Length: 208
Image 1: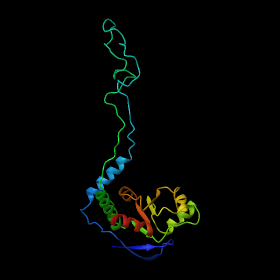
Image 2: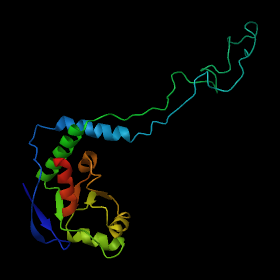
Image 3: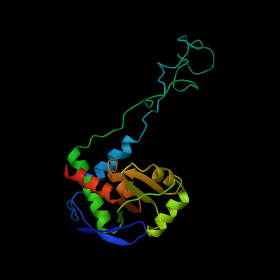
Image 4: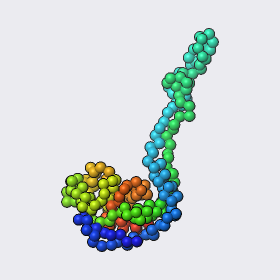
């Protein structure tokens, strides 16, 4: 498969051979599902916590005598049915991460990229740089590339400080690097913009 390569004026300057196998329909879907579930699970903080009746502060004394008060019998201030008491089966701190092996992660990323390539949602530019960290300049650059108006993911090399500063104020535009690109990001944005070096880095990752 070949991809057109543009310059920052939006003009086609050449072609790029996709350096990994484009996965056909019907293969890799489960790997994508497993990777996305694992990614979203790893983002959960897992810090919810409540106290059991054994952890609630309070005396162990019986609140009042067993009989003769006209009230239901009670044996503890920490009872779960009392206000301020413990919680039955409370949430506890936990790690939600799921293990996905490297082969599955690579297959998932290849599958996700393959689908976006076939759908025409990937744009490659020779290089992406702005002379100053101004959002207006970067927005104009995206307009020249005819990059759409939905959510957009910019994949660069990570050594462009002006690009990082200029892009962070644009709504629904996220900047990442070829090393950090993952299956979830490939799927959740409407359009993907790669610099040539960043795309080659992703190809290298998938060939390892």
